[in-house]
Length: 312
Image (cartoon, rainbow, N blue to C red; front, side, top):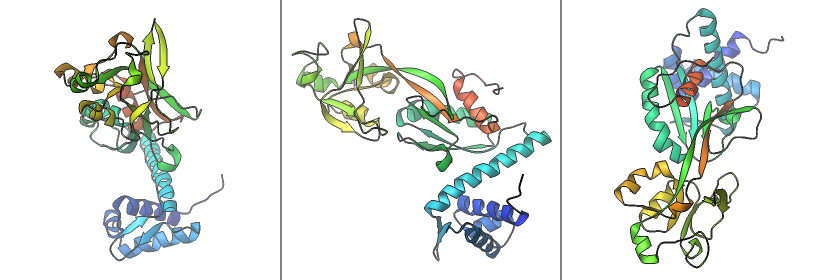
């Protein structure tokens, strides 16, 4: 294998990653035990070698450029893998450690993941978890994510998808809205959904409305409703709008269980309930996942309340 880096270049990469994490040459220097001038010189050498400006520098702060951000994420991941490799061969891999990044959609984050992360951190206190709550699609390589949770399996063969759960759907509205507009008795027809205000979600990946899903005569049926109100980014906005009498919406049952129990929301057309949508845990295909990533994957795939054993 041809050699691409000398010791000085590898050291410069480490200082660059430190500066990106700390947001300061001075803080990076303190963490590395060198002078701020040494950090600045190292990063200047990197920029000259790459022909790319990595930081925007002002008298008060530094920030990564767009190109610097891409390089930072890749370098941080590579250095992390080197640390994992050393631990593996020296037998120091007894406990997972280091930072991992996970992207999660809003409903699953607030009603499933965040509560479990607290328990995960109790098991593995040396793992720092960076959670990005968003419904947009992410690029694992360019953005430096380790894991993602999404509502559909990816088409990309370089990604692995593990089913977390099939989440039942429910049609809901506030009692005040139903008192004002009446309660629909069927999916279609004069007493159906068409004459009601429908609150719907736009799928970020396509820009299209997410169809509502029902069972009719034992068969799954999808319907695209005429929208009265549309939420484009935060899925939980559907629930809030429904709570305040904005109309009828279809949402995940686990996000409105408390409101259904209290009567703040009422289930609509329960005879057509019974459909569900999946949530998948997604990560890049790799022969050897880092220990911290494997630990979180295994933890999330276990039933709640059980201590995981590491994946083979």
